[in-house]
Length: 273
Image (cartoon, rainbow, N blue to C red; front, side, top):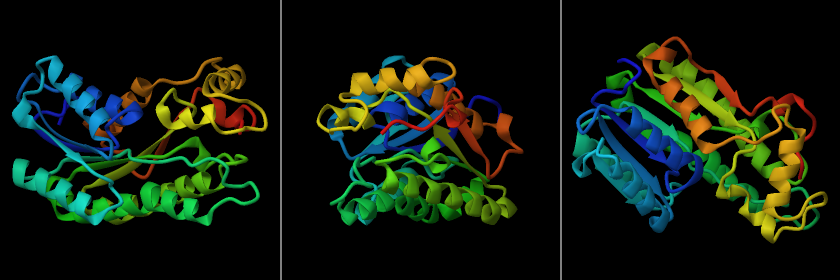
């Protein structure tokens, strides 16, 4: 396949907003008009997912028959089963799986933190990923497909008040590497993209969460941008570009790699809590 994913079937989780929505839009923009892409997207928020559907169809490059949306929580077996059925029954195969669904619950290292938060983040950020890969295993092997997992710089960079989140993303990186080893013999590549601070809804909790250093989402973004070597934060579309690259033939010999998209934040000092 070329850079364009001609006649490819792509599944993207967490596609209702932010990075996930940007990834869906990127695949549509890079596809051949009307016939070059079959897209299956899912999110637990039906309202935002509907907006992604509308955007994907608005440019005329993707026709309605080639786009399926599934509303549901990816941690639930029923949602995963519906996603697999919609993909394989509707389009007959899977070529690219993008695991973007993820959550961040703040305050995980402060006194009184709820251990249930750790369970929920591990269920969403890690367990649902390998469960979905296993569900699509035969189809991915048959197509010699590609898997891209959405990680975070928090997988490598310690951070206060993000213990459970950092733990889940570090685990996801190891899932990525182990799967890369296991599936390489079948011609399936498994990689991850690790974004830094990106302007998405994931930090909206800062309007109510009392941070020790900054308060409010706008102050948080400003403070992070100030310590980034590039003096700005990233955008969802910049992360989407990296995901699309790893899923394309341009990355045909890249396997088990984590592509960090953070403007150099990884080595520029501690993440703010």
